[in-house]
Every structure is written in structure tokens, then in C-alpha cells.
Amino acid sequence: MRAHTGAAAQTARAEYTLPCTVTSAGRARRLTSSFLARPRSRIAPVGAEQVAAATLIASELVANAVRHGRTGCRLRLRVGAGHVTVEVRDDAPGRPRTRAGRAEDESGRGLAIVRILSERFDIVVPVTGGKTVRAVLAV
Image (cartoon, rainbow, N blue to C red; front, side, top):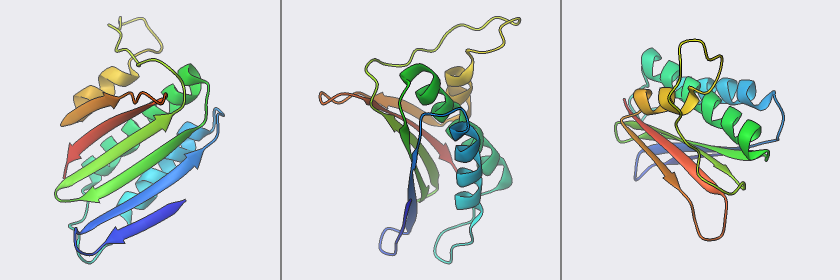
């Protein structure tokens, strides 16, 4: 884990490496809520609604990386400048796809939920492989 506070930019960042296990999504939830709930003197506090949304987003993205990418992943969190950013990077090839879910489906809605909760959502696939899925929420 790495945590940084940028005084000039007034941002706080953390990065966590998570293994390819079913417990990683739960760990992502705990790490995200703990990081966002920390008091910071130069950064406006993150509201309970945004903490809950960011925590769900982190959980969904990490679960997807583990389940579909079958790799460990890196969870990056950033808060500042009126936004919370949640990024999950994995080494698996391919872009995740949003599926049209049906009422009787028990899974497959994760990316759709992330898109709804996010102000901005994007997927970056570098030529070196892997991908980063990023969701930005307004604070």
C-alpha cells in the first residue's frame, strides 16, 4: 500500500495491490471506505453517499478483474478537487463489456452499476497490455 497527500494539489492518493482471490472485492470495500473516511485538513470531507458509491464501485471493479481477468489487480484511489477517482488495473487482455441485464440475472450488472454511479467512466487499454478501468464521482 502507498498513500500520498499532495499539499500543492490538495489531493490524497492510495494504491493497493490485491491478489486474484474471491476475498479481494471485500478487501477493496474496506480499504476504500477507510481511505475516504479519513479526515484531511486541506481536502473537503467526502460525504457518506459518495463513500458508499465509491466503495461499491471499487468492489465491482475488483470483482470483475478477479473473476473475468483472472489476475490480481491494483486499486488506486484519489480524492481532491471535488472528485473521488477509483481505478482498477489488471493485466488481462481485452476490454470489459457492459451487458444488458435481465431481471432474473443474478450477476452481470457490475459495469452498468458503475456507469450509473459515476460522473465519468472510462477504460484505458495501453499497447503494453492489460487495462485500467476508471470511475470518477463528484464530491
